[in-house]
Length: 363
Image: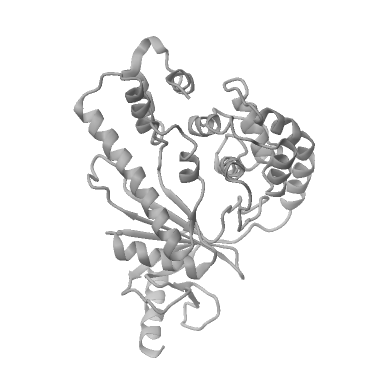
């Protein structure tokens, strides 16, 4: 990877220079830190504010790596997507780290990791989402401020009991990732395309066909460029992507990358994916007629003293009965569950708080 690729992906004329490249990068997620590291690699002159920003970004990445290692040893969770992909970047290039993504082997391990984070860091928000009904998968995001919260993004750690959440419609939840590390990274890149509106593999027409539409995600293509020299076995890799229901997204991403990058063995992977596309399109068309996977988002009712004896969260009805209803009591906080796009009313919150009071006094 070199700065020429960055200029191309960010649509900057190299004649406009590194200042314009950095300016354009600041409008694209966390790419400024990657651009700064690429410019530093080429000894481009920069002032102390830029160098200080890069030092803080490197410290942030190191802290995420330390957190992942510590939590893996203590709870069994493991890093997926961003941190493993960063391992394929050259040592002096800093992959953007918007969040640390972790997958837990079960709900007990997830809450053990959350408790560790809440205990060891000044966590300010804990968001929770349940995928499915019975059984369900749990996703938790915790956030706390950076050392300089006015200049740097907050720390964000996302934990889930499912490695791949799918799109809640035609691509199902797949709890586990079992493959070589570089193949898992390719799977993660393909999965990320499911949520891109109007982009590669977005749900709807693009998701059903795998056709590439909309501008490519620069970070996805940069990630892919770091995987092109890995020893992918074409037929086996294509079969694994198909088994994870991601052949259309992987094919579309590789099609977008082909004019920009030497794909190496990934070119043969793209060829091997071709016979997998039509069966997956048919499967998704049939799945579209079935009900969507229920998704419930938690609205915080209260943070609690850590319930160290709890291995799992508890679902309660709004009236306090154990009927799998509207309340979720966790080892760190209690929530009112509802649809992601439906804010609870004051009456809903009042009823939920009454139910919590009843539980506190009688359970």
